[in-house]
Amino acid sequence: MYMKKVYDQKEWFLKTILLMFVLLLTTGIFNYIIDSAGIFGQGDELTKAARALINDKMIAGLENYDERQLQKLIIENSGKKFDIIFLGSSTGMQLRHSFLRFGDGSHYFFNHGVSGSSIEDYMAIVGLYESKGYLPTKIIIGVNPWVFNKNSGQSRWKSIGKYYKNILEKIYGTNTEVDYHDNPKYLQLINFDYTKANLRAITKNKKNKIYITNTIEIDDYIREPDGSIHYPFKTRFKKDTDTQRDAKLYANEPVYSLEKFNKLSNTKLFEDFITYLQKKNIEVMFLLTPYHPITYKLLIEKPKYKIIVDAELYLKNLASSHNIKISGSYDPEKNSFSSADFTDGMHSKDIVMKKLCEHFSIK
Image (cartoon, rainbow, N blue to C red; front, side, top):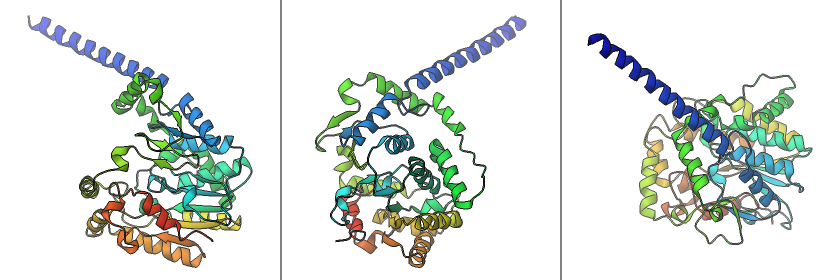
């Protein structure tokens, strides 16, 4: 009886391992084939989105995708030359062509904002333009404090990492080893959240996938032809009480990309990149998007996060020494922004972008 029991337990264990293997394998194959975010390929939906934007169409329904690959498709396939571009994170994605006033307004603008943007993202997108054979004449760079945190955890730039490598080598004039192979992306094959996203993608009604729209008055993710975005109604028209709640939660540890932020890093690379752009006769401008008033107050009260003040001071000194226009501040009070101007701890409404862009405009 004792030996029989041991045998049964061993058999149960082996069958359990086999079942788990089959489930993981099936999940991996499913996620690889559906790949709604275009992680393992560009995907039909992403190509469709890029084609629509290039042709001056406004689209809706685009969510859960590789934002870097979308920028690549836009730059590589657009027949127009963009005079002004925005580089930065999601905090600047609402910067629109209509907010900028340069000359007669006939310039072409595109917002290349990507979530969690880093210096590598800035350089990679410029590298994409270099590969196309031209560079914009003006670049607005949205600089979040985590850009100078080597422990930010941001690695999504690897999706277009070879273009970062190209610019790095142009700046320093030497071959440089860069590990831009994004091995962690394969963990998405067995990621539960990505599995749910792929299930939603195949069960959605056709009308709810990427589609052309002529109005922003719809409850969906909307992207304008200039690359800027509009959020669904629950974010766009969020109650201020909910915003304040989320602002407080945002400042709870761990804070997005600000952990282990002990000193400013990457400053030399950042400065060398700026110098590279200026030598190409590109006008560089810095945009500092504010935190929510509650979030900012909570952050600077904690010694481990107060370094965001140092990051802002560094950028202001750099802008002064390099004759760079700078607009905004991480501190919302410096531009008289209130809670009603935000949707969470670090994302603002259009009114913030409009006001901050006034400093860049040339009448």
